[in-house]
Length: 233
Image 1: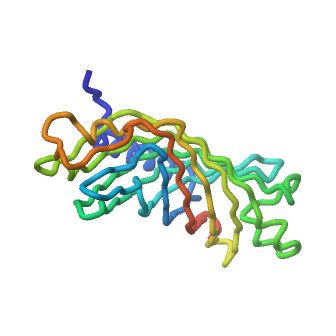
Image 2: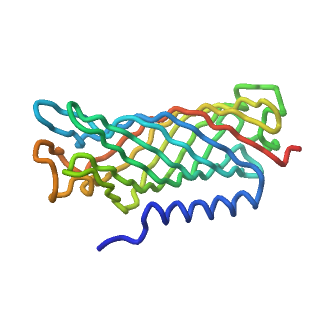
Image 3: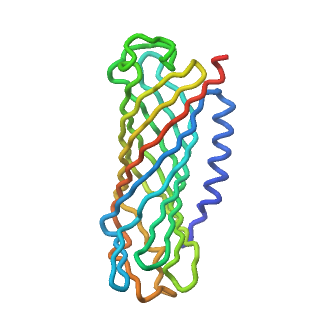
């Protein structure tokens, strides 16, 4: 049965959610990432060559910041868009788009019991302790596959939501009470993603095949979050 929850509907929903969050409190962030992914079963076999998928790409996200009142545990729920490209050896290019929601939780282990009014760069003592954090990030993602292996390129929307769990490390560099730069590295694990809609039986170029459309997926990301607090003026 065809799902009604398409990427376009997801974009509309997330845009509305962003507007609601932005009006609630002017503390938000923008994130840009490089990503590299690996799916053990997604191996494309072509004429005399093999290609491991899903390859590398980039992602961009927006988030809203809030925290616990008496401990250094901060939350930045994020709406994220990502693109991954795979150049098949001696063949076409594939592209996968991801529409995601991540509930990022930053835990400042070295400054956990501090109840300061974050961002903490307004207090300059113990710079490393106040800036270092670990991140736990459960998420939901929906992929949209751009298929170039069939006879006639087409978009094939999977339409399924896939759960993932991310973990990472980051550090806050405070420029002022208005602006923070936070480099973050993260590993995200998807228990199973189904790529079957990208390889339909009809129209598939017989010179290419995929080992198994169902596979677990690991994504490595490295990037920068720019935090903005308009209420600091």
